[in-house]
Length: 333
Image (cartoon, rainbow, N blue to C red; front, top):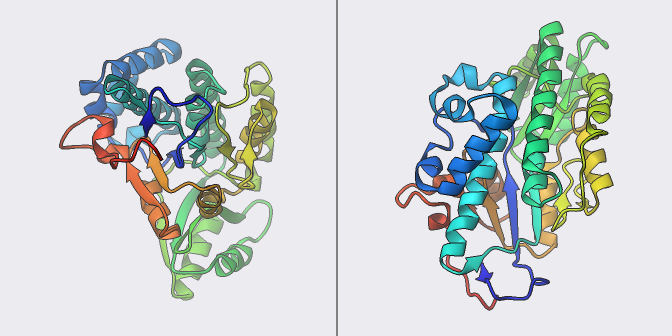
């Protein structure tokens, strides 16, 4: 954190990152909603834009209903933006601000990052979430798919498992997320996914079927990615206030065109999350702040880099305001 009067060109050695689908949980966002006017306005705005009662969906849905892609994607985006707006609101009250060096996000979380970095409006982000969720949900209706986490195997071993489990274009599974050294997520047709899980267990790994009713980050979604690119043509996307780390290459996205290309390629390309975190540390980041429901990204970042101080704003419970969990920093830093 820096003093609010600091130069607008200065940044803190901080990365703000946002989670994606899979981090949702019933009741998410309720604490910040109850304690922040900015958060309440965010939920109201989201409901007006989408025609969905986002507060009710987030606070009262069952786990299964919240896991429905049509609900999950706008709900996670809304909760994430509500939390960062509440954080900024509370920091302003004490005369401080956070000037992150980088923004990042895991999968869908990059849309939250683009909104937070002023590259994408919240309204347009919500509209894109509705369309992205629709495309993924419709695909799953036509073709049974799913995702699973593989623990305890190397990336090479998991790729080999996927190759062995794939029997053709109508039954394939691929690596979707390189999350950290101990967790890799695979995605694809349900039949191939089940074979891959069994093969992973035979190789002395652990396989956990994820509670996601979709597949993602797989070549199965080439057509959906192309359709999503067409949808985005009418959506303005500008340069971010601060660079956003690409999920696909771990390069820094600095222009609207680069962000647009990233969003199109996401559906068919794996997420290099471990490399994202390593890129942040190479850029001098020493504090990673996870903004959104849960603390999955914070947990993974701790395993990836021992150099980082890592916090999740969703862990703020004793004093239910987002800044209560932030470590005290020297304003001169």
